[in-house]
Image (tube, one colour):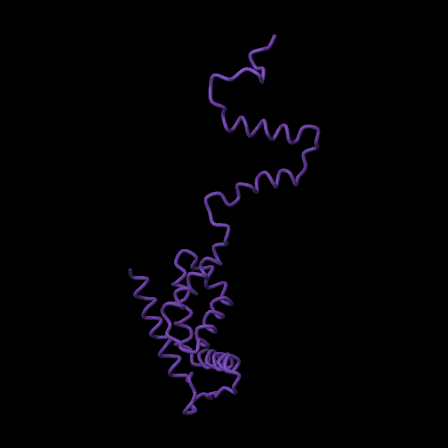
Length: 175
C-alpha cells in the first residue's frame, strides 16, 4: 500500500521550481553542518544575475579603447598605445564616468591639450614607445624647441591628433 505522497505515484500538478531547489538543498546538506562558506556560496550564485561578469570599470575602459582604435589615425601605433595606457592608469577619472565612458576620454584629452607640461610628458612617452616598436633611437623634442625633421611625433602634431580625437568624442557624445 502506498501513500499519496509516495514517489511511485505521479503528481497531478507541475513541480514548483522553488520547492525543488529547497528539496535539493535539503538533500545536499542533510547530515552536514551549515558553514559560513556555504552561505557565501549560496548567495554568491546570484551575484552576477542579469549583469556581465566583467567589472563595469573594465567594460568602460574597453569602450574607450575601442573608440580610440576606431577614431585615432596613428600609422605606427605608438600614440594609440600610450593613450590607451593613460586611460588604463586613470582609473579614478574612468570610474567617475562609468555610465558615459567617453566623457572620461574627453576629460583626459582636455587635460593633455590644455596643459603643456602634461602634453610634453605624454609625447616623450609616445616617442619612447615608437623607439621600442621600431628598435630605433627616438627623436625627443624639448619644450619650446623645433622638432627634429624626422620626428613622427612632435608636440604640435600630437596635440592636433588629440584635438581631432576630441572632436570625434564630442560628436559621439552628442548623438
